[in-house]
Image 1 (tube, rainbow, N blue to C red):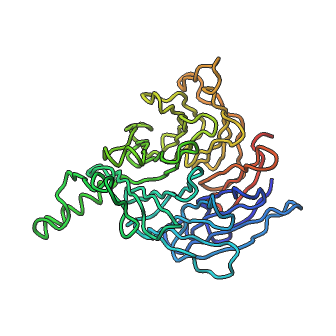
Image 2: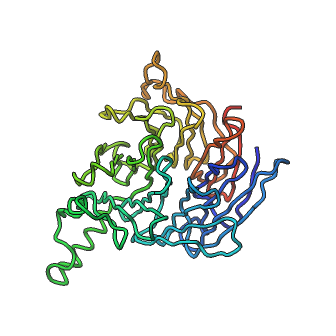
Image 3: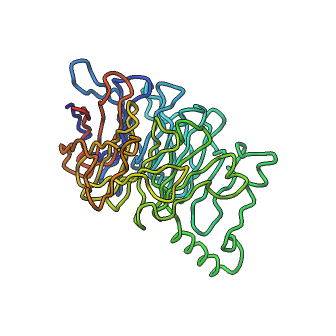
Length: 384
């Protein structure tokens, strides 16, 4: 086990480089992310087993998410507490980002680079929107999905990058259930704005499918799991799949696509559960993994095995699971009878909430990284 301390900054997100097995990035926030600055760490794992900082970038607001570029080995995009996304070059000595993208009106908690179409990434925010960006194009989003319960579910981007042509009219044809802002008396406008704010369906996680570049899965504060298609949703105004009570009414906190089964994904929530879904028949989960004592903050499928996944939780542990739904001769277990079936390993070195985890794609299979509010990054082997 290797470790590194992010002194004064609590860990929120960690990710291995898709290009090197010796580099990881960590998004952190001061004062547990409640108020204060953020810091992006780029760490190098030496051949001697020592983790050393290669670069760090300070921001005025906390960092809650990050994603390595899939097209440039030295670029990282961060999700920021002020509603912005910032693109950094880790080789520069300047503290300033290469580009700032700022359309979200609340904290951005998720950012994910498309593994298939490497020219775009998506972001998810507490303002209830998911935005798609093309950094090689310009600083404006190219598409916006709106998950707020009192609005339709998609709209165009803004500025010169906005979608144009036949699809633009369909995307712009939103039909809000409330009157648009700016209509009515000042008192009515204030009431409308307050209702919109209270009804915002926070986006905790949004990720592109590793198989289909137009598919995005997202999890929300209203307990829902939604799947969006940038081709179909633009015409329909709705997600192509919506599971309204994915985690029994509690916040649905994270999602990850299985790397070997294109229609399978995992979610986690405040109900302490990890649920496995097949989008071909999503009336109920195909597996339900229990064992965490508090909310499960993140879940990540192994890039080396279609039945292995990793989770982190507010119970200060990270856990490794085997999903039996991947085995044709084994039916998914019923959590009422055997709540911890599938649990392979418990990692208990953290002393505070464990927020995020990631698998190394390179080298010996099984190496993972975790980070949390104890200001620690641990690198350990999930299969030993």
